[in-house]
Amino acid sequence: KKLISRGKPHKVAIGAVARKLTHIIYAVLRDHKPYTPHLPTSLKTT
Image (cartoon, rainbow, N blue to C red; front, side):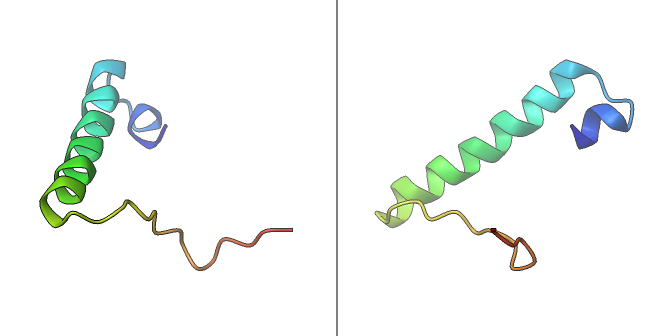
């Protein structure tokens, strides 16, 4: 949504998401560790 709000085309935003997921998948396979998402510490749950 950030990229689209900055005026980037939809395909560019999809490409950025795909690239991010590819990096995550590669790191999981390379390190043989389960994926643990890193949530921002400022995120509060109610």
